[in-house]
Image (cartoon, rainbow, N blue to C red; front, side, top):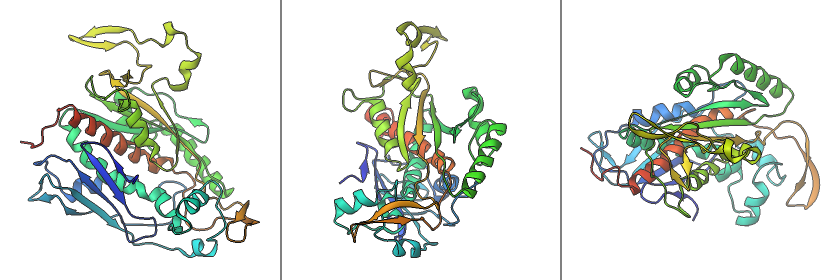
Length: 362
């Protein structure tokens, strides 16, 4: 019931971490969009491991388009895409099946589904499900790109190390130059060293990702319950490790005066703008035309090799657990393209609702 997102541009995801595949069905994509597997693959590759402290699991994540594309263009039919799981090792999960892993959804999933849930690698609650989000986001990015909308994201903090602020015009290019997606190379190097130190200590780290959308027109959003920031937050909270979402100045507004927080209106090249952007590009649940700025708090990876106390849910007795297997010390860098994808999917859906994207592209 909860595996579909969107109203006109909808994505329905399926697959488990150690199941046969990760897949998504995208419905509502207009006919006539030039699309092939390479378009999707370049986005999926950004999510693959390879940075400091990432998992030893090496999935090829080779994208296959099963339906909805013919002769290099979308047909208007549902687009089904998948990646087969090729590097699965469930041994560590079979061994500790009933020991609840602290920080994971083991207990909640067991309770909701009566123990029938796929527990291997976290099953449906694994970060691996975000591969489906990225595949869908690749299509959404192509669609909104036709409107001049550009979406990107970067790492602004890992383990308390904060990247120095950068101009929006420079962030996209600079962030793509290092595997942590941090726009400041010196701070990226500090983050990488901390990740390695934390891995050696059998622990994990969290951080903050900033998502940016440029060129979003004013007027997107459907108040009051289909508001722009609410729907985007919903999409971002569907990323398993996300525990906080804030727009613009975020929680800092609580310590501002109105004279400090209000974004003053002005004119630039005949267009209404605001001199500052504390609102993060959204007011009253509607896009303002200014850059959409959202920050996402990502929790430390729950799976750590350090011993922890827990409960055996089968025996209903206390026990201890050291989580073995293949896990990321810090999931933040691999979540950056996922944030981009979910922003693109949400903006694309709103653009279709506003009639900005025709049903047949020419």
